[in-house]
Length: 264
Image (cartoon, rainbow, N blue to C red; front, side, top):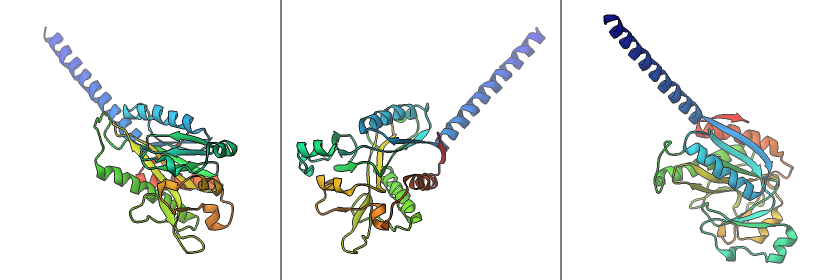
């Protein structure tokens, strides 16, 4: 009888230790996943395909089945309208759009209309801004704005490595530069994001690296009259290598968001 009681106590302690070990291991895995950010370099990808991929990965991230992820890619010629988009900010006719091979897509990010195309580096960070399992109608405004400011910081730091001085403009989102002619500010990077009800970010930023700037003539960028757009190549009067920009941006993203960037 005494032996059986001792065995039960030993088994209970063993099960307790095993359960504790499993809990600690799960906690370690969750913390490791949160520190790491998976980087996927996808090349040229149609807009809808990239949007579908964002949504699928964001669902997994929300339940801890996928590390936070940064998608880096280029799109074929596409105009996208955000939630505040106004049709009158699309200037080209249907015939012009077809002749230039431009798709038009309405999406659920913030902001108005923007352009995506080859030579533009698009980044879609899928980050868990709220704890796993969080449910809410809206992320606190301070966290949302802080996230956008950190994205701007990443872009400004990336530009700096290439000798371009980027900065924020009062009351405007994105990154701006002084053009070579020194007259009006020009926008070099745009930001439009969404944070879903589970606290996971979607959409992101677009940095003009070596973009065909003629496509900006088809829209009123961001719905702001008189906004001039520029690219890294225009600012430097030379061709800028996209892969080099990708490498620098990944490094700056990890530093700004305190993430270990893991290429897959």
